[in-house]
Length: 238
Image (cartoon, rainbow, N blue to C red; front, side, top):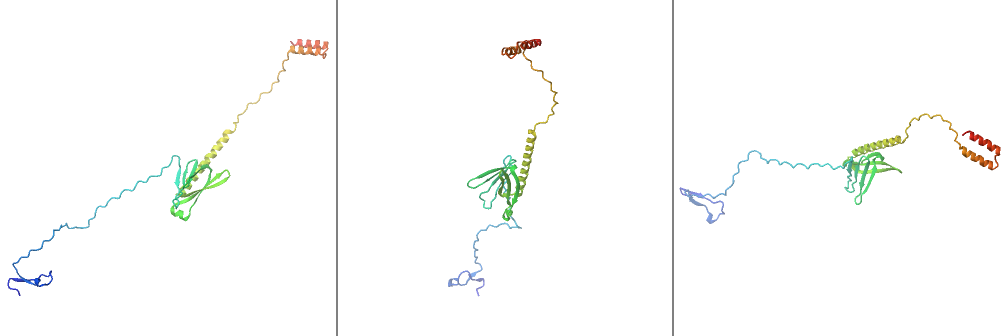
């Protein structure tokens, strides 16, 4: 029991040792508090605070592929391998197609020679949205089948090629009909022929007749009397 005015002080933070035995201190002893590090007090957060949303950048503008003047339709094949895609163009008079990787094979077909256009699609092509456009072309020695492979929007391609070929065939037929009619001679009514007038007998030179009579007389063909009679007849017509 400590004396009156004293209290028992035990330091629990330090290990027990002779020097750390409980000691009796006076109540008048003032123990200075240990300094605390300065802390930055933040205002209380009320509610849920979030940063303002950042506006996403606008998507790049979609640029339509350039179309040459006079080209009604153009497409590039989309093979599943991505290699050797064909390039195709359609005008009012020609269908152009190019193929090849290392070398280019370019051909053109008069659109008026296209007699039929069809579409073929495999299951894989349907899933990819492409198809093969089968173009049947009339040649001088028969028919040729041209395949436009892996065309995007193939039904649209079939429709526009068919319509252009039909219009070209009609225009070609009209030109042939116009050339046929313009080459025929015009039928112009002819006036009735005038009745034939008998021609007058040719005029005979009397001097030449007298000369011929003299030659006949000298040759002994005519006698002197016959020569005199013919001479008198010719002279009477003068």
